[in-house]
Length: 145
Image (cartoon, rainbow, N blue to C red; front, side, top):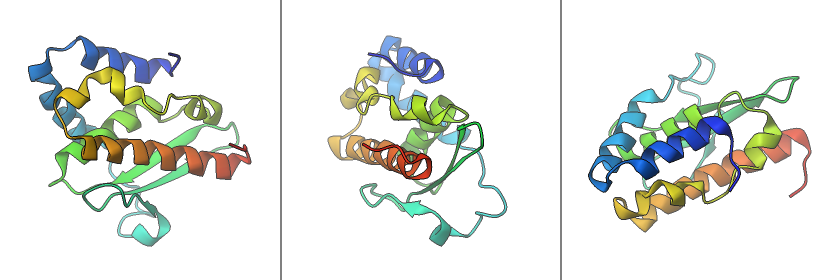
């Protein structure tokens, strides 16, 4: 399995952690979601909603001239599991080149042992978030699936 180094470090931390610590670790990542930039604050119509998430979840991305991706997430604080996913993706993917994001394994979260501590429905939400990130990246860079 090949994935971006910064995401792989997160995956390894979860995989190596005892099962009893994985959910608390995920919840810690909910506090690592950067605030939205001013121009997106309160502008959910400018973001894409991920309907598969059990809570209102929105994302936006920007790609600079060097093909580096910046991700923005809007998830309510009362949804710490979903915010935790956003924190992992933010820390693991932000600032990477578009090609690295597109090469990220769709099921990377399976290697984290999260299926032992959260429901399949919530994992489906994480999968949908990554899918949307990749779809936006392809659209903005013109890369075909």
